[in-house]
Every structure is written in C-alpha cells, then in structure tokens.
Image (cartoon, rainbow, N blue to C red; front, side):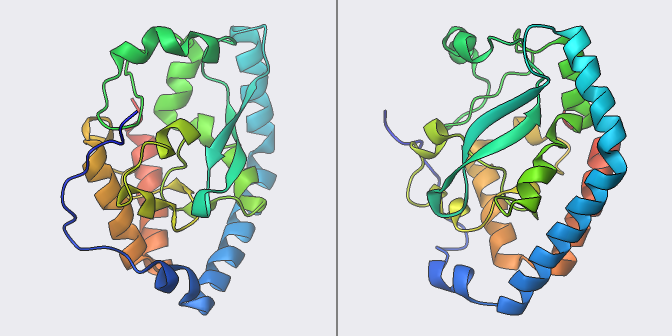
Length: 224
C-alpha cells in the first residue's frame, strides 16, 4: 500500500537528535509532572472508572469493559494502549466491512456514525471518558499527558518520512489536534502539522495550556 501523500512542510524538517537529546531539565520536569498528575487523577477517579466499567458490561455484555490495542510509541516502539471499550465485542473482526466508509484522508480511519459503536460508547467518546485508562500508560512511561495521539501500526506503516517525525516524542492523551473544535474534519496533513508544531514549541507552559484547553474540549464534547 502506498504511503499517504503529504503537502510540502511549512516549517521544514525537525532535527531528531535535538528533539530527543536536548532540554534535559524539561524532560525530567515533564516526567515528574506526568507521574504526579496521572497518579493523582487515578486515585481520585478510580470509583467513577469502576462505575463506567460496570455500565459498559451491562450495556454491551460479551466482552471486557476495557479495550487493549497495540499502538506505536516514541521511535516506533510498540506498546499496549488501554481504553474503555466503546464498540461491540467483535469490532475488530468487522473492521474490513466499514473501511470503505472511511471519512478521513491519509492513513487514519475515522467514521462519525460507525455502526460498531455502542449506545453508551458514543457518549463515552463524546465526553472523552473512554481515554481515561490511558493514565496507566502515562504512569508506565509509554505515553505523556501531552503529545501526538498514538498511531495504529497499520497507520504508521503508511507514513511518509515527513509524517514519521510525529513519532520522535512520546504520544499523549491530548495535543493541539485534540483541542480543535472541528478536529474530525481536519485533513490528516494538517493534523501532522499541528503535531510537529507542538514538538517545535513544547514547553511546560504549552503543556498546561493544552491540558486546560482539553477540559474545555471535553465540556463542549468536541469528540462528537
């Protein structure tokens, strides 16, 4: 399969060594921040998360309330990503049936009215609650609170060399793309540009701006 085409870069290519080796103090502070906030969130939210898991089991029996899927992390390393299950238990087996209905360009699959999504799952996605188990990925060091959203292996296999630059840093729970009101209508090339813009500009201040904007995006249900 041919890689997805990308527009000419607006701001040039990233220096991979500079991205991954520079600013050691920032990286240490960021990791401390990730562990502190993710741990605190899990300590506070675990009763609500247990209630969500029970609701999923009652709404869509026949499968685990949790969905575990292989994703691509920093430098192409694979890891197991955790989510609340928002689809029917056999959703992966039915993927080929809905692939022709893809509404996103590039290597990403998105379908606003995916028939595999359950009633409760639609609401969990709109509210962003399905992503909460990824706090465990943050604690394990596989993800960060802020960073490009983690790709599926089949998506990353189709990246152009320019698009693969989004794998230079850890994936995150939220990012510049995540807080856009029209994020599901944004072309994939623009999504990549937003990720690379974040990598160029990243700082603790920008991380906090995006964290607060994410609360607003959840409140307005940008995930709809």
